[in-house]
Length: 106
Image (tube, rainbow, N blue to C red; front, side, top):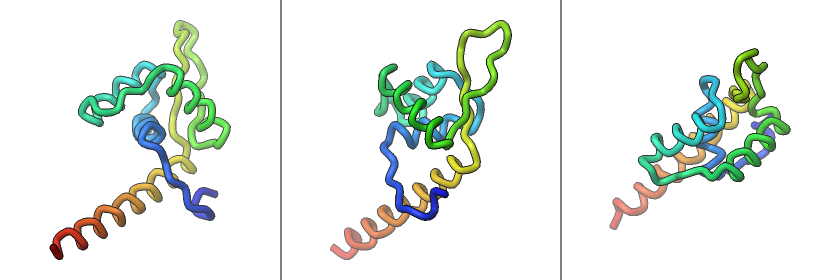
């Protein structure tokens, strides 16, 4: 389970997981990531599909059954993937809180 070890996500993986709280195909993930990050994070196809394969192997996402009329694979986050996202949010919040605490002292 994800809670047993400290996991630090890359921005790409973080945005991919956030994108998959609803079923999406690769191009949709790329668009969603760029939109959520205000254009700052742009996923290349190689980066995205490598990450998707890794996330499927880790069981943080699943590949959904393909519709008969669609060639696009869709993916969805699993409960374990959601746990990983929640742990990352806690980690990032701690970083933000500590940064603000220290910088507001000066």
